[in-house]
Amino acid sequence: MTRMREILALDAFRGTKLVAGKEGLDRQVKWVSILELLDELSVLQEGELLITTAYGIDSDEELKRTLIDRLADAKLAGLAIQTG
Image (cartoon, rainbow, N blue to C red; front, side):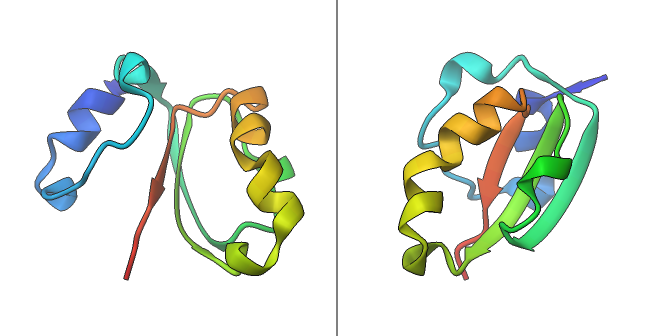
């Protein structure tokens, strides 16, 4: 299986800035999910790399407050936010 550090070394992720979670770079990525809206977090599974624009998160205080804990509870491999 591919690890997060290998994903980040791909050309598609050139210029990506790792802002947190350096200790998780050896997590295995089993699947990649792309969600523009973060409204279906319950479907995420262990080992997924979630790629999102995080559209609408600015207006959702509950989601901002709980997002990282919810993703950690689901044991995601990583979170990538594409910032326009």
